[in-house]
Length: 136
Image (tube, rainbow, N blue to C red; front, top):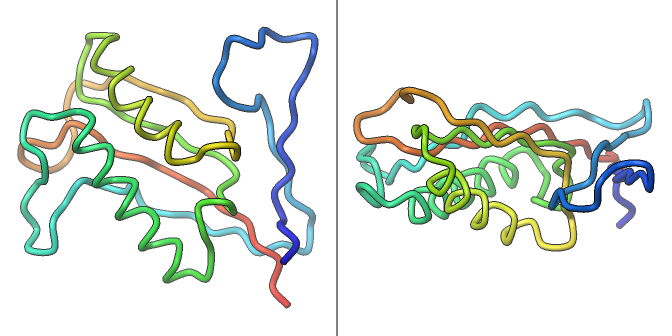
């Protein structure tokens, strides 16, 4: 099935970033705006207490569930924002590596941010995403 998302890279920008610098979707695509994917278990408790990578894995899993409910997959994501409750760069990197690996070759434009606090008790990671699909 053809995908709506086209990733854009620029030789004029550093290749150090582990993501495309921009992405587009055609006018006829349907955009899907996801709420921040949180590392919550089915019972509402926060998964992976104190574990940035573990919480990132659970947030990715929950994001993929929300995408499926909207008729999309991780390959349809056009951009992400990864929020990490920490001022330590190494904590941000732990979460980022999980998210980056989940996306694989589909390295969408992303922003990684350290924040002071997130909405749920013991929450360390949240992933915001936008996806685009071509409806047939």
